[in-house]
Length: 364
Image 1 (cartoon, helix red, strand yellow):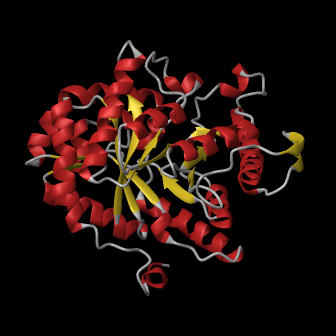
Image 2 (image 1 turned 90 degrees about the vertical axis):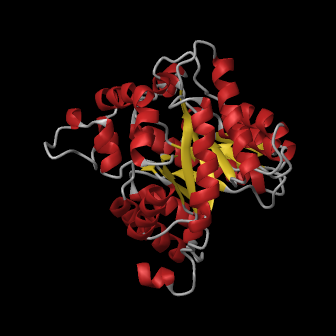
């Protein structure tokens, strides 16, 4: 198993530059500690929550971060490609891949349910079906832009062009690794399987749901003549490592409680699979989220056990992405948690390999 970050911005700075500096600090620390990759979320339109410090263009952040790090790979996690022109997206991402000399991954998705980028750009209503259709067509055009050896024509329902010849081509051949946000529909898992994309699973996906989507991913890959690799799957989880569970709870309680209350009001579906005995999402507390194991919080031993259970119940994954980009605890406490994870937790998990001979057949 490998380890990375999912920087899902949720800070409260009045100045965006201050938030970007905090995000950069975490990515630079991850690079020094040996994390393999970092996916940088994009928040556009209403999905920003009206925050002045939102990060809407991950590629710009990645270019600066690449100059300040040595080995960590980075990618947008994810770019809502339905609201952009695919040819420009292909050019932008290929240039970032060149500038980073292959330390770039491309990530795409539909965009959050509150996104209003379609309306703002005059592209139609904020309809999830329309955005999904545009996304599927856009990724077909983008991948063709990266790999075509000659100028080509494209006639789609949403995008058309003649003599398309975007340059430069990606540094990595035939293209950079591509991840796709995969947390709701089997259709996206099937898309990942057909094209050899990396499935990116949300921190709110529970094991049984991930297992169902993996079955779609594997079946689609086999039908397309591809060999499915469970090690390509990325799973996100909020992890916080301290000396004891009680200490971890108290380190985070002052800063995380308001975030939980906000998510209960505006994103109740995030907690649909971890309801308390009352069945009412409004009764969820910080202690419940920790005690139930929804958040992987506690001593190194407890966090290790929670990750192993998640791995086994979900069928396995190749990279665990630690959720960051949030002002939970202090900077010093966040850094200590990351160090403890890599020193005390990661060594106990590295031998987990979902593609080990016979394991795929045993799981499915």
